[in-house]
Length: 470
Image (tube, rainbow, N blue to C red; front, side, top):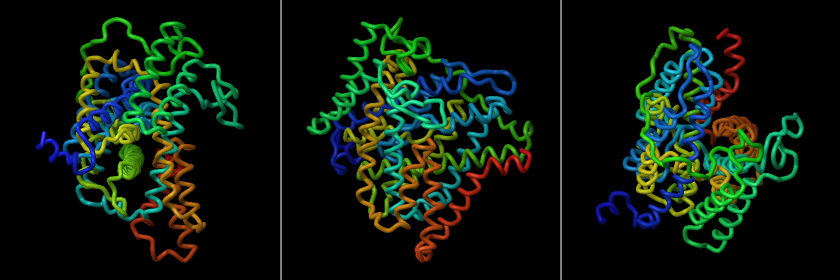
């Protein structure tokens, strides 16, 4: 136990073994939906050859890669930041890439993207970019991610939905009709209020108790009313139905391991493939950078400049996650913002990651049991964590407009565009332009100017691709 304590610095960070185990469990519960959601996204579209990924196969490799990368990060970086398939990149692959490539070729691009990110981290360039970001923007990134998490929670719970009209684009309740009639959404409200009361009264393990309590209520509700899935029955559960049917055990199908190729350059040409790699690298690079910044600050592990322990190792392993995700066809794996749930529960070391990773590996064999927590219940934890992270804005003095505009844009664009990278880009570009106009250009790192220019290309990539005919 002493060796474990010293290795993970449990006591030094003010934590305990029990707290780390509890934090790791909460993180897994908050993230377990990815075992269901990732295969939903990736197994639907047909690639250019007419082939589809199979749901069970994607679910198995999703759990395997998340478990392995979460443990690896916990042991090497010794931080409580869990890994799983990044939702931005898997959606990009499913909607924008496989129409012109095969699935193995698309995953080959993800591997290349990961290798580039690893090279940037090893060379120190990724650290330089991290250090070039001013503290006000780092805090804004934390708050923006918090608002993003909160928004995801509200959407997952069915409290906020798209209306299908230009104005307003979203509204309260199912299809944004302005009222709540969905029983799963009411279960979310119950879980949220229960967890909030426990947190307000500083009850130890409040988030975990709230999640377990909400799951028990969800199981009871399903047993009584048989709501089923929202896919089959309007008003049903979102991603997973809180019931066990058949055996809770199943052998994983890992046949997708190694199913990637680098044939995209010959199929669509070097220029078109390079544009796709650039998009993947930019999104992966800054999504992860923003998440690492936000989580380290939430955990109280960052210093006055926003730097946290073993930063270089963390950046390298995060890049390895992209390589591993492509090599297993689970899509790029990256640090997950839902790790904030475990951090809020007290997780401060990589030991929590070992617990979360072990549960993901176990989920390969007990996926029916792992999916018993409905997304509506897990969403309550996301809202709680989002509130905690948004509260970091109190550390920014926004009385000066040249600071206020980039900060607010960073915070607002993330949830509204459903992308961490977009929020960071809006913040970087507005910071260098407005701060320079205010006579503060000498305080801006040349590297930040370079990155801001890169974001301009990133935002204009659609027009550039059309102009270049790729």
